[in-house]
Image 1 (spheres, chains in turn blue, brown):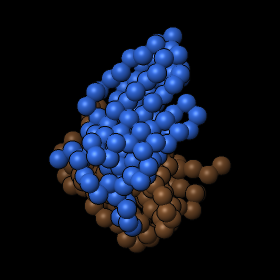
Image 2 (cartoon, chains in turn orange, purple):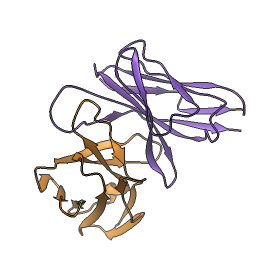
Image 3 (cartoon, rainbow over the protein chains, first blue to last red):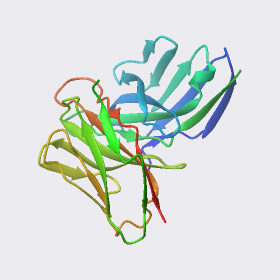
Image 4 (cartoon, chains in turn purple, green):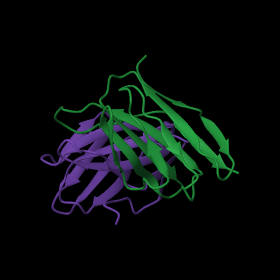
Length: 113
Length: 115
């Protein structure tokens, strides 16, 4: 049973335009959501997170939006740059000592020059 | 520089052999994790440890074993019982006991290929 879903496996956008990466979840106990970026043959690196008590968090070119009622979040990258081309993972955790992360399958973003 | 070191980066194994992947961190993090990445499968949790001498099974623990004798080290053994061991293995660590999101720091990964 997949609790974190990234239904679109890939996305291609033009440099300078906005990239919107979507993520859905099913577990109502999740209260923190994170986005990671991963290049081939490397470990993922943390990008941005959001608490379930917020609906938006912004860090430079990256903004995450959370719609708790729809159990949906999205990562916006604007403007997109060729260096943003990577796999993006959505992850979620429930509060408590056992706060392990559950990851989605990832979305491959390609930013065309 | 603080970080997580995984070794070896590439490893080849014959069927029926056990192999141990090393993971060392100097971040003074309490918790450590092992994930496996397969194409189209995302990251799946194998084992995790919140404290020394204690660890819990993740979602796909069958065919794997771990130990946590030191805070800095969390080696993963892929046993011959693991049916499909060829994958990219990622070790991670995080601080515990703080509020906020549980941000994991990952190593660079180890690619295991079974011949």
